[in-house]
Image (cartoon, rainbow, N blue to C red; front, side, top):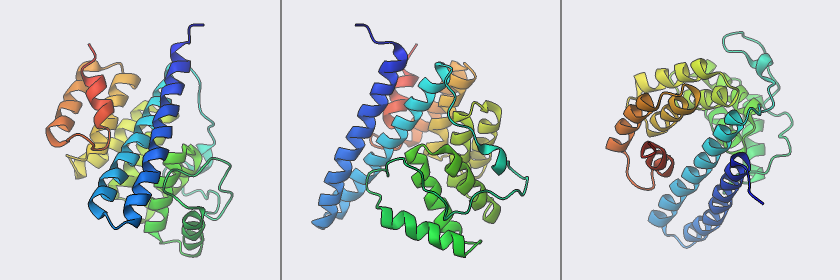
Length: 234
């Protein structure tokens, strides 16, 4: 039986997540043995694999015409509307590698008690992004940006979620804001190239952005494998 490109894409994303889980266990072992250098390198690799899985899964979803669950209306940017409490339902998605349920619960409790707790919201947004829980990433990133509009990480997270919803122009707008403040942000450059390629069909524009990425990045950095593969595709 010949598998479709969509199925192969989702299988590929699954293998990336599996690799992230395996490496996360190795990283935990190295950390326990006091090998801080190895632990840090492996931690970056886990994050890179998780991001690559997200990018691949999102790209396949958009190209196949499948739209992820959209419940973002309650969290519209600049609307001032209230979303769910940060201490609300955490959903059924599995936690990402290296993240304990205790940490998530503590972060949600801190955020629910302190409306100005930026750090907890940004960390939750990062965790929910790895879980591909787009609604909660949108919520946490929006709340974090209300507290600190200059947060590049939350701005990039917002761009990723908007891309997953098919909001291409708004996604690029968020990444441009992040890159204006931090022109060499590798995560923003890697993802902007992907949006130009998949969302705008602008291969030349994507390659220009990735050329900027490759001048700064090195093997093992966030998005390295994805950029290397796609930037060499004719």
